[in-house]
Image 1 (spheres, rainbow, N blue to C red):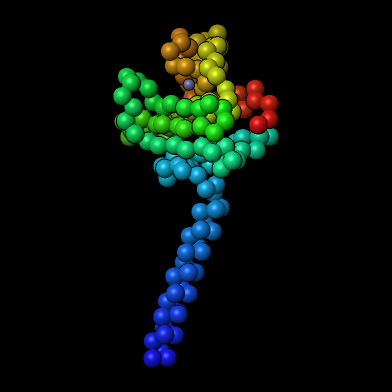
Image 2: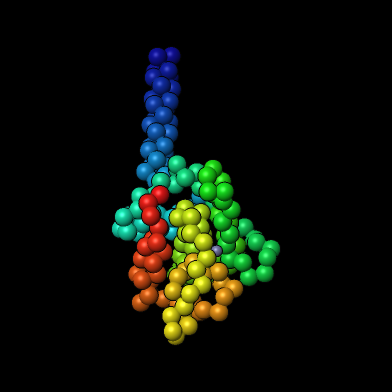
Length: 165
Ligand SMILES: [Zn+2]
């Protein structure tokens, strides 16, 4: 009798310890409702923001996200926000399934540019026709060039016009 209740207690303890590990692991990233596929991109965005002097707290921003089919032509992502308590990013599932890592990053950063940085669209272009910002709408005439050589420029541009949060 004594032995079995000790074993029972031991089991409870191990279970409780596991539970605590899980909670601790989860709290090392912000506890946000973000699909695991998107989390590395959110994390990179946060790191890049910090490099550019902006501290981002997804938890207090109350941001949520999902990957699902967007039934609107070529829309790869959307940000629904009222600038306060509603910040929701949707990434199109068919886009996500065929896009390269860089293209995924561009689209997630674009939507975070709306939802977290509060940026609108920016359609201006360099003389060669390349968009000056990844905040372009995609409906204008400039062309995207989010390629490895340009990534640092575009990331810096993304945060450069944002004055604190
Ligand atoms: Zn947009």
